[in-house]
Length: 371
Figure 1: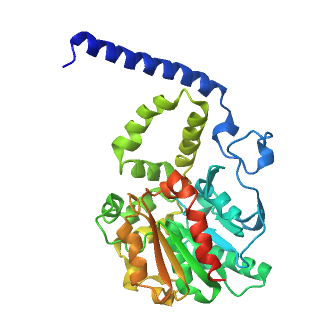
Figure 2: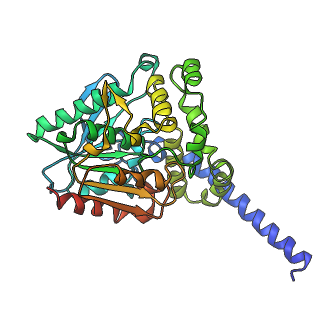
Figure 3: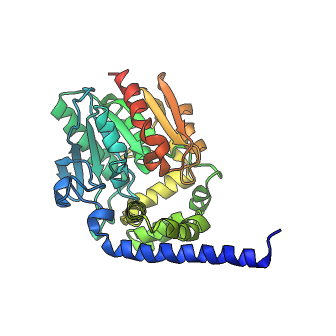
């Protein structure tokens, strides 16, 4: 049993360590700049490529339509797959999560596997996008991007990779245009929205989507972010900032933390009409798996997804419950469908040390066996 003096000394030591970390952290914060903790568009923008730990992979603009941009990443090794990959990220956050820093980059890892990568940047929504519909994004921009890539490579079909909400959009696209998709890889993608395994699903089922969109027009990204953090209020709003003090004395770890924070709070506003349909037809109506979803006057039938499918989900995902993702294989028509899972959370699929060395090679191996 500890005596009071021992407990007091233990508490004093803990406080002294806390104060020292805090003091050192303030010094580190004052010395950090944008290039240590933000995002640059390319290596040249930071001006110190040889020492910078967070440069994004090099890319070039291939196609643009207003705010929306299609990029192609520059190769790092000899490309080993003739069919390129179009990556479709969610609209609720920025695709920069996939290329956070060199040692946490799904983009870089896939490039190092010889994959030819394209990615859609949805841009930042403003008032002009208030009435942009889901059809505008799926039948419009995604389809335009696919056609641009097909023409550039002289291919009938390309590989399609969709992530989170972007995976849902991609599933709809693959069902509507199966002849243009060679292989389909959804990652942490919600498909069956009728589940109580995720708090977001429970909340969204009760949202007054019409009131929300009619009141705001475009729904503020900050509001969406607050909703996500409230899914785990203590760990995401309190505990992580308390634990932050323990790493403030390490400038590299502090920069990594701030880089993640920059991404988390870089949340574009959501185009009103697209979000209205997403809430009402997917979260509330669950029309995708029921076969009732209409897109541009056509019914979306998941059975039309007959190309090879690799469905990747996270075991500890609190945003997209595994049961929601795993449902995909029950509703598609593909005879070549596989699952892959990792013991990580939603974001951890892309930044966790558990995935950095194995996720990209496993995806590439699967794709390369289906050229």
